[in-house]
Amino acid sequence: MLKPKEQPSFAVKIIALWTVFLLGTLFHTQLALMPLFHGLSVLAPHGHVATDIGEISPILWLMLAFFTMPLIAITGTCLLDSRWYRIGHFWLTLIYSVLNIAHLIVDLTILPIAWYQVALMAFLFLIGLLLNLVTYQWVKEPHNHGHRLQSAH
Image (tube, rainbow, N blue to C red):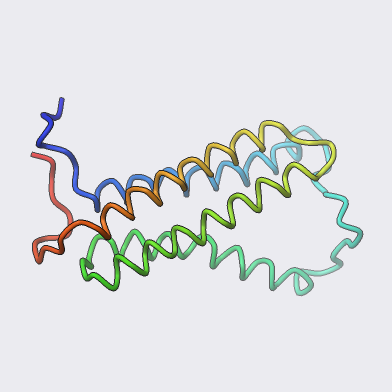
């Protein structure tokens, strides 16, 4: 058990929260595909069905960017401690919170509503708010030039 003065560093907390977010996001995607394993369609009524991969290429690139940015943030948080990095990272977390609430709202408009997906997105939104808070605290913490990742021991 950690003593009160032995709390994990902000970098450790931020990396853990980004990791929880990414795992939750991957599970959100897997939940959407789960009906395939039971012989059901996963097509959502968008009004257009793609006929080849090229038609959805922009969506795939956006999804790649959405998954890659947290990976870059995790790596950067391990290696960087500049004030500018902290501020940029904080803004990135805010952007993700806006995207998460937008996604949650969209999930509530697709009928029939998949409440398990809504519950997971609500959880991910809360994780995002916690990430906003911890990152804000990190921005406000006095800058030190020490090692990025420090053990709680």
